Image (cartoon, rainbow, N blue to C red; front, side, top):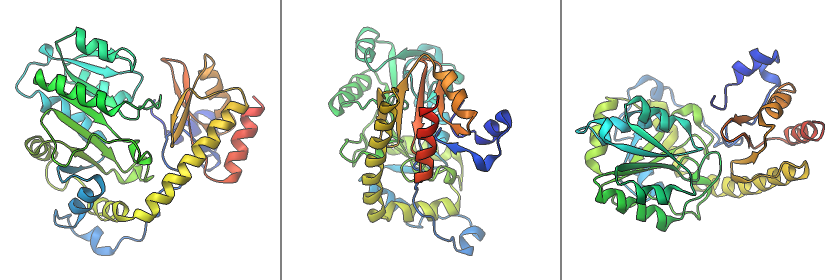
Length: 333
């Protein structure tokens, strides 16, 4: 189950929606402050010349991107586009695990042979299996927080390109880590796709706005697949403003680093030491993951539970009252 299914949890546990503390999503709880949207934005169809492309190019330091209705839309299209002229059964795809499960679901639904790899063994798997023609990574990884070395990513890209394959890097959580090198390049080379989103760092998951960076021919194919007006006018209007708000971005990065450290220390203090994380969440391994998630849910606190391996991902509380509520629940378990 994905994080953020608050209504489902409210029905399951019989707790009113407004009484929940939702820590299941890894979304910035103090997201970019959304201003009023002018009436004409709601009334007119979106236009490509609205400044979003320029704001995107400045923020990501590359013009080779396409706005999409959330990176999930691209995730579902990419398997068919990247190997459009080949039989899926002839292509093996290395899929990082544990990771965002929609990547694996999209490739498997398209008929591709998925090979589960871990951060520790993926290098060896790529070397040992020349039939692997695509590698799908999340950087930093969700939920483990693993951050791959930029030189390794470049090497894997070159290896796959030599096989006429692709490296796909989902950077949905990278905005909060400006010191980490993105794989986005001023001119995107063949064999590389990078996904970005305004849902996590900017806290605008409901906006459904993301970007795909790749060579121009692939972006054109994706645009045709999505059709006209794929991104709503309000999403384009607000996305441009958010990307241009550098002061908010700087302040948010500092605050998220501090809050993530505070969360890590809180979990450590109750004998649930994180084994990974990002500025937006902390991840713990525990064989009691399901039971602990249930115990917290009985108190109206929703966290993200994983079965393989048994683990929990905690997002950031917002207010002091929310921090105290989480601490009391964990101490009393």
